[in-house]
Image (tube, rainbow, N blue to C red):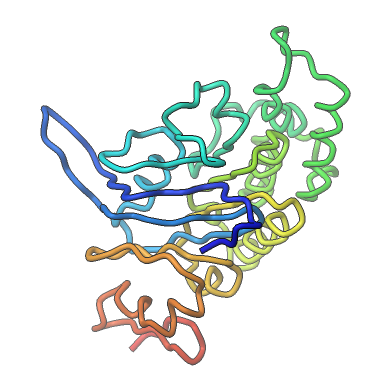
Length: 263
């Protein structure tokens, strides 16, 4: 729980997520409670199909909650018009962007759209933010290249740069290390850790890199079929929550090393 001096950026109260169709409800998870403060890196983990993307879509306003409340900076998520929400929340999705024919600079500049005037012209401040975002993500050297020319690791850094250029207090990323090799998976998550610390933005990401998330996250959300638990990684380890993530017949969690091992 955050202290009174900390600014709560993202909060969920009695949240239930899932789907509705023909007046029927399909609940994926319920009773979700948490508070995340500025500067925190939060990892979301769970088995495939457990509902991680559904939770992220609900927290970002792409999908309606079944019950409960989500708030950004103590304002209900449902009260934000789309234009206003885009100044509070930026999202980096797993899917490849449809605008890959743009240059890196043009792609990152899209992050400034919520802040530009009705003509869409970039101000001096906009250009400064774009340059700053490229500096933070080490993308300056590739700024003239087309997005379709980039490797997966480079494209992920460019996508993060666009979110930074958007200059929102909250950034949500859906599996930012998908398709990356081990080095670039570690690089991206270390980049997110540094950005959360240096910019004081709240960064929430889902991942299958549980070992790395344990090492780098300030807090984690652990989703299983029975519960959703939110706490600091060290507490989650001591409470045994990682042991329930996968079937125990082939893999187990080593609490001493904080990693998964094959039986």
